Image (cartoon, rainbow, N blue to C red; front, side, top):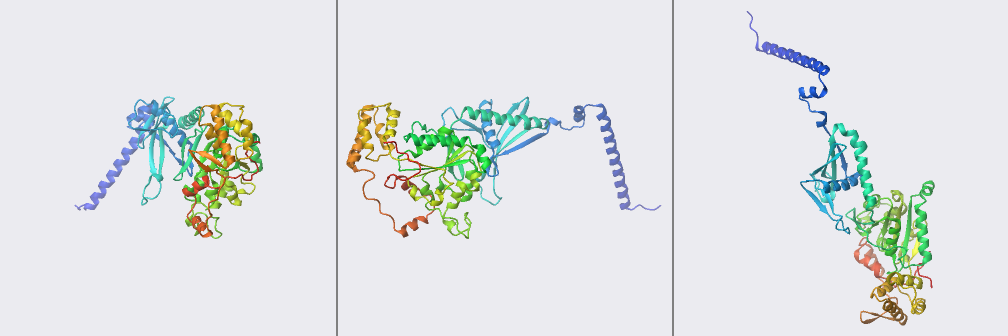
Length: 507
């Protein structure tokens, strides 16, 4: 009898195992087919130990940014989740914050990263979970500036159509209704490449700003015309924006006029500090992250662009040329913000530049097509004085008005100086007398301030100008220094300057 080798026995066992497995698999498939014809789907799933369809979860990721833009769905989700947290019976961990400038009753609740809250919509449960991710590679040091928040909205697979077709649109609509009910003008400022917001509480209106009546009406008419010309801008192929250059001596109401424009249009204000912008690229990102129907404000633009070099012919404006290594933002970057391709990144936007010294601006900023309307806010005239007296003390007429009218024809005084005197007392007669005393002292060449006599503001020797070498040294220091900003607000003689539209009250 021939002996069987070990390899032959192993091969026989392998063949037998394969045959058995094939038979079992065929029997299982036959059994499942028979049961599927007899039993319902849920019973079949339970018999075969399969998870039900409701146990299989789907998820939607909602990131904070959509490319370089803020994700509107994320912002709506953040506001909506805050309402869920306020109504939730129990949430393990949440954070509370009070936005700067908001009232105490407007405390905002938010999820901490890694926590979740459950919502119910049409009988279906959905879960909102907040997490945080960091941009950059594995070897890069993580910072708070790289962190991006992400909402994960999870739900049962059977509710996918309902969540995408009904739930998310309902969330967006509710947040929009909430924002309309709680509509408050906001003031944004840039910090580390992001916009930070506070509530804008300036109550200035066109009725309270001390300016010439004809100039006031011209500005109001121009703003109202801008709002109704969407189709005109589309047909002419122009960006739906409007530029205003507001110039004049310190204290003449430039900032109050900006607040009045914001309150008239109900537009948020984005106050751009050019000195804190690190590059032209960051400037573009800030610009496209602005909302539509908003105002971009650049105060003291003469200080902001005084040290901004033009783009070198052989280099780029983002740091590729030697000149750009010492400067954060170039003049070409600011010009592109005004009327370049990047100025078309939004709709219904107002661009406002303010300056105390229009003559110091680069001619490139003043050429036609960049600043559509130049508004000169001049010294206080008698019409503006009467408006101030009426606003602060309800005075329509006074025995001192003829004298004050004659004095205002001869002296130059800022509306802010007059307002300061009118606010020193609640006695209307005493307030008018103090204002008249200010004008008399200004005419005589002296003024009383705090118990000592000083020369009037626009008289006296000017500060010596720096030699050319010293000025070049200042230009090399970069853009937007705090000391230069302070000089931009207070320096200069404050005499009337030229302009297309002047703001001194009628004599």
